Structure formats: C-alpha cells, structure tokens
Length: 136
Image (cartoon, rainbow, N blue to C red; front, side):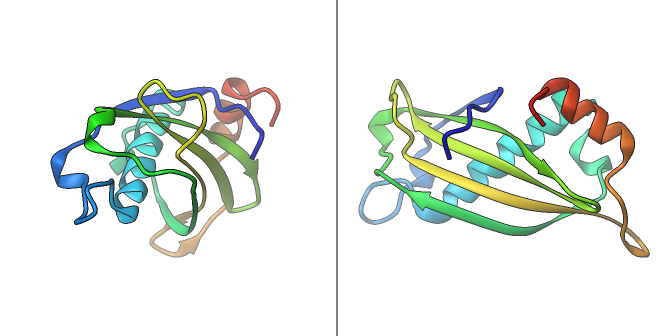
C-alpha cells in the first residue's frame, strides 16, 4: 500500500482502547477506520454519514506495531482507491502520534444500498471523490 492518502484524522488513544497487554486492541483499529471514514464522507461528499445509504462489505487490516496509551493519539490517513459499479474501496494508514511509519494499514469495501438492495454509486459521489482525489 504505497499510495498517499489525502485525508487525515487525528484521534486520541483512550484508556478504554487498550487490552490486557496494554496496547490498542486489534478490534479498536476498525473503530478508528470507521471514524476516519465518517469524517471523510462528511468533508468530501458534504453529507452526514447517517444520510448515506451504504454498508461495509469487507475490512482487511495488517498490523505492523503496537500503539500504546503513551502514544496519546493516532493519525488515520485515508482515501478512496477504486470505484466500481455499486461499491468502492477505501485505503487507510494508522500512525501513532509523531511516527513516520504506519502502525497498521487497512482496506474496506463499501456497497451502496437502499431499501430494495444494492444500487449504483451515485454520479455525484464519483465526481466528488475524483475532485478530491484526481488520480482516481
């Protein structure tokens, strides 16, 4: 995952994020990605997350180093990496505060849905993604 991502979110590392080994629990990384995704959609699409019709179809994470409470915060870099007919993929990097190398990388696939099932990615979303990320 050598791609640079244009969107960045800073989140605190909370005591509740830790597991018994005193590092951020693997499941919490999914929450970090979710928060970055929500803020990305609000900034790029200009729409509140609860007004978007989509579901998370898959999530993949690769862990490279532990994040601990002393790191104080994490920075999540993210962006859309591919747009399909009814789905799109997003890539992520999670950095401990001040670190140059990611503690984790991830990818999600999101599917656009409504009450009837899957539907095409709206053209307005495609345009907004490409305007924000011209390399798409």
